[in-house]
Image (cartoon, one colour):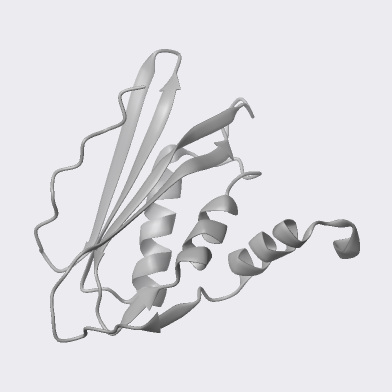
Length: 140
């Protein structure tokens, strides 16, 4: 029942099923990068069901809109109970942000914690060919 859920659960569910909140770009005539990091990503491995953890990084050159920070946080939190691969998460986030925020260029990085000793970093690009700064993966 929806009323048995916490306000956080309800907010995460809402952002997962509705458009993300965006704001007008306060500097639409300038090229600049917005860098967002969510270091508490979690989802479930589609094969084992064990939890996966990582950091989701979003770098983008805004167009006419910018993404509201709480909307980004809640959207990334919406994956926590999904059985989903690292590759699918990164591409799904890139596709949704490109479609709704409409940046000039976008880079999404999934920097996942080691599983079985293997480090995984997935990067997806969308939009114009613009230069992004180098990314240094988490070493843990």
